[in-house]
Length: 214
Image (cartoon, rainbow, N blue to C red; front, side):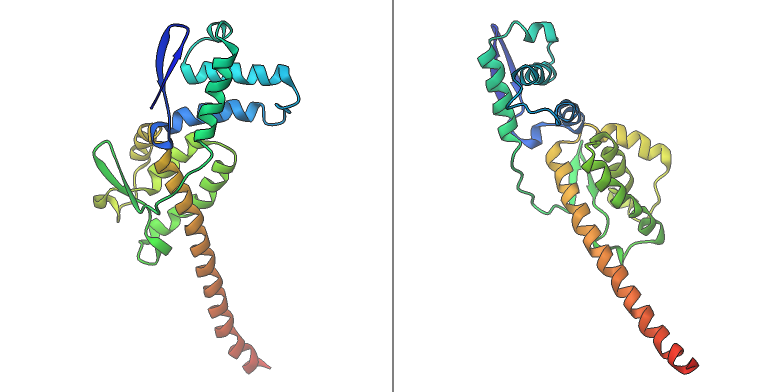
């Protein structure tokens, strides 16, 4: 954590992804998304409004309080935290521990999974679309649905369990969420290859039959 001093106050803000939760990042993303069509380098007034909203959320201080802060402190805080979020080195995790419990990502390529788990992979494409649109709160629900404890790997989770876990997963640190994102991308690639291979095998089976008809 970084200790920030401003207006005779001290507050800690995140210094790396593991110190930022889904819920917190979702809030920051919504602010950045609000200004994504604005030329912040060319429009000074809009840039100031963006920094005010960003710092207000980051420090959990009202807008009126941020208006009284030193402009240099505001600008340095925005630049400093955004620079920390420009890079993420993933470790290709297959599991994660949260609040004392270990959860596993779905089985690689799903070949060893139950049919119910295979159906759950329909959530993979949905999750990726949510990520592209910045809906990280929905990703918490998708993680709650397909990331399971060891005693749940062959169980189709009840909706009540998913709902309760999704609420808890809103406090997952963003480094774990990014690992999940990388997993989704890898899994989609694997599934695409599986379906392509299956299609080719089916075509090979059909071709001899078609030749017999002719």
